[in-house]
Length: 413
Image (cartoon, rainbow, N blue to C red):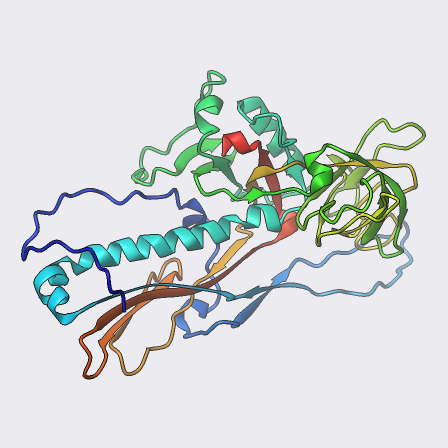
């Protein structure tokens, strides 16, 4: 039990009506929580739901059928996170100091948990994206840049509707100030949620003060150019030179790499559209799925996602030219990550927790969103202690091909 509670020695309070210092929790509000009955079930850490992704095919240039293997694509969402806020009082403290004040403790506890969940869901902007717009140095501060980012997002292939853009709250003033256009607010909607900015270019915009920061490895921090030596047959491991010698921190997990244009003797690489396998205008970008150290010769082997496949007729073909020795890449520096996401591809599960027998337990669940939190309380038998616990479990994920990171310099976050 806490032994140093700081309480006011009075029996009544004059409530100040001070609002909580709220964060801009747009990710929880906009995430897809519509799993079949998942929000109605009691669950524990490790509970998993699997949802399907659209299958991919390749096409043939004749009327003679060539049958191809079919791959059913799925993605898992695991409830792997748990947090609680716990506090306790002596019976005297509870009766004389805080019994009439418990709702304020509860609101603050839930707000604290909400900020933790929001931060985790926002981390998908960095962890579940491989395409990106921005270089981590140049500020994103204009409508023109937003239009360009949306053009790249759609050019690769995207859902027609439900496109959401998550911006750094510190970037919004300069964007709004950059031109005559304004974000178009739906005046018929409830606009008390300050993270709702409005619509522009057929996308809905939101701002957040909890965007994740990605700390880059030394290759990204130093602006080093890497040169391709070779690539594995499955397209998932690329060996580079130029990383600096014996650097244990050369590449960090979730670093993002972009193949460079106008390299002497090399073609410019472009992604193919995700459906149809036609050349797009998108540069080829990948994410490092694990940290990698360089050796004594400055070589580093980077495991990347997605696999880079150039074989015609392959369902997963995604680049217009084969990866070849001599091609070059640059790695993003340390940055803040927002995102563009389409098709409700950001998923969140916050299921009910079981009752904490023998303690009185309350589960509050929002039937519209599936968001649930638990609160239980009790006294230790024969002890002068009364404890309260608010807790929550959750999991989140985003479908990478439906997402693109917006890269803000650290100063814009």
